[in-house]
Image 1 (tube, rainbow, N blue to C red):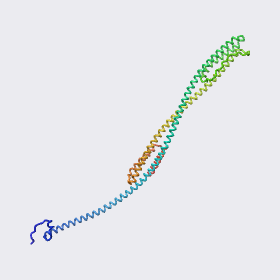
Image 2 (spheres, one colour; image 1 turned 180 degrees about the vertical axis):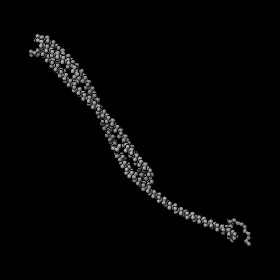
Image 3 (cartoon, rainbow, N blue to C red; image 1 turned 90 degrees about the vertical axis):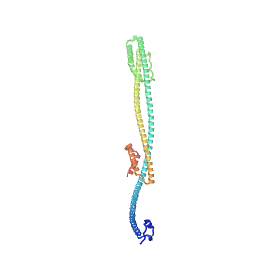
Image 4 (cartoon, helix red, strand yellow; image 1 turned 45 degrees about the vertical axis):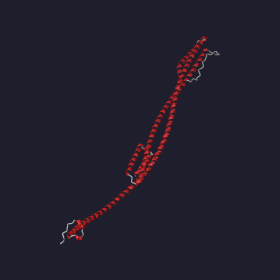
Length: 382
């Protein structure tokens, strides 16, 4: 019989040597080891299954990673190619903008030259207008002076003619009375005829005096006064009444001729005055035409100045856009991954500027810059 053993703990049983263990303890130890072995086998099988699953998952993950890498690589290559094409497009666009800028600068130079020429023409027109105004004022002053002189000469000639007519009337009456008193015995036909002739001459002078007063308005002051005739007795046996009548008749004829000359001079002066008035009217119309042309030139100059300012503004905008495009191309070279939305925005702005350009200028006067820009836009769209 085996001696009765004291119960021990599993730890103590594990630490005890086999010789000291009983069969029951050995059996329990074996059962426990078998169970532990089974558990470990199950755990090992589970771990092997987990390892297989992890290997399969790793293979699938590696395959999916390779597929994703291929996709990303292809996508990046396509994007790189598109960005390279876009870079060339931007470079071409920058060249077109540079050409358009040069054309606009040439146009600005032409506009400046045209403005300088228009300024010179405006100055010349202003000088001509001032000269015409001065000439018109001189003509008006001369006209007023001539009218004043004509009125003065008319007054002087009227006074002179009135005085001469009065003296001639007195001389004819005195001669008539002397002749009537001296030759009363020679008959009545000669004195009566001479008296009738003197009376007719005096009546003619009386009737002619208003016409002479009207004609003397433009007579020259250098006209010599008619010579006062005196009744001189002739050495021939002629009647004294006939001699006095002939002298009076000759004086009347000379006065009539002088009146006719004064009338002709008055008509010539009137015609010259009418010609001067027509010339003054024509000068006034020419002055108004020149003033209207000067105002039109000023309006055109203001319009050209506004167009020049608008062109300068457009050039500044184009230069700014060209600088932005250059900076964008530099960033494209450094990163190789630009944002495509910037190019579309730039194209929209460019189209808007072209539309504004076509609205600003009509089809007959489109500037070369707009045509070049439009051609560049068509090339970029192709």
